[in-house]
Image 1 (cartoon, rainbow, N blue to C red):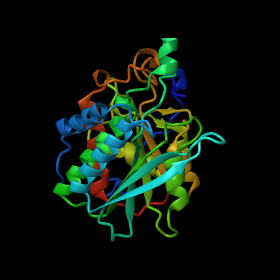
Image 2 (image 1 turned 90 degrees about the vertical axis):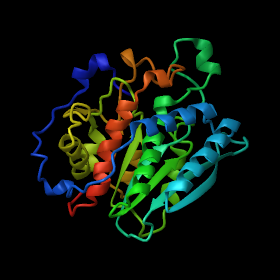
Image 3 (image 1 turned 120 degrees about the vertical axis):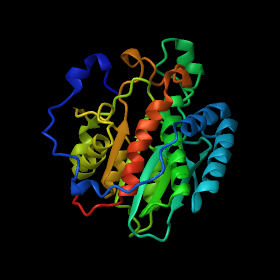
Image 4 (image 1 turned 30 degrees about the horizontal axis):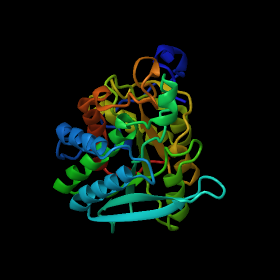
Amino acid sequence: MPVRRGLRAAAVLPLLALGACRGDPALGRHVDHPGFPADVAWAFLTDQLAAGPRIPGKKPHERALVWLRGQLGFRADTVLLQPFDFDTLAGAKPVRMTNVLARFRPAERRRILLVAHWDSRPKADNSADPEARERLPVPGANDNASGVAVLVTLAEVMRQQAPGVGVDLLFTDGDDYVDGRLAGTEHFLSTLPAGQKPAFAIVLESVGDRDAWFPRDAGSRRHAPALAHRVWETARAVGRDSVFTAETVDDSAGAHLRFNAGGIPAVRVSDPVYGPGNSYWHTVNDLPSNVSRETLAEVGEVLAEIIYRGIPEAKR
């Protein structure tokens, strides 16, 4: 569960001194590339909210899938749909879910994987109102229309200028459907062909908070220290270290741990505190009014820089 901002000082773990970011070979070489358009990202976020709660098995979920496929089909070299049935309860009808994979330079063997789940939570189980907890879904502006908006906007950036390496954008379905299960991530990893693992993965979740704070979680540092160094030092190199901060918080459960367990170095970029006292997380208040296009742009700028710097020869 995310830490509370009021307890931020207690949540932060000791951090080793960081090396200089500029000229660090672990970051790769800067390549000029298009800027990340904040207004486009904002439009993509609000488009998702306009479709309705993106709950697997419901009509708004189907509309959102059509939207996502259309946006990526216009921009990516290849778009693959990965439908699967998810069993929830014994005897219950399986729920149809669909991962979406957008590929750029699909023939390239060395690849970067960027991940965001595109479904939204069925119940607002952290809302203060008991009726809302039982009857209302989470609108999902921050969790996780924000991550999807950043990745679809990066697809537009890469449409304008092809990256120097292969890039896959994975939109997983059902990762917020049942606690303790990451349906889309589990299915993707279980069906990933041998020999096709990316060099690394970056997982985005809840990256739109107006009061942005992106510390490193301990799991990312422990399982993929070189990648964590690369992401946060790249943020420093592009002047976003006030948001991608030099702090580490306790482990958080998430898809990045599944990727690491599957042999793919992965880190998670996520704001662990949403709203005053974390009061918007998994509630009916997860609305566009509580997220920011500027935060989307800050995350997008860092990821664009990582993409165009390519894959440096560095150990995990």
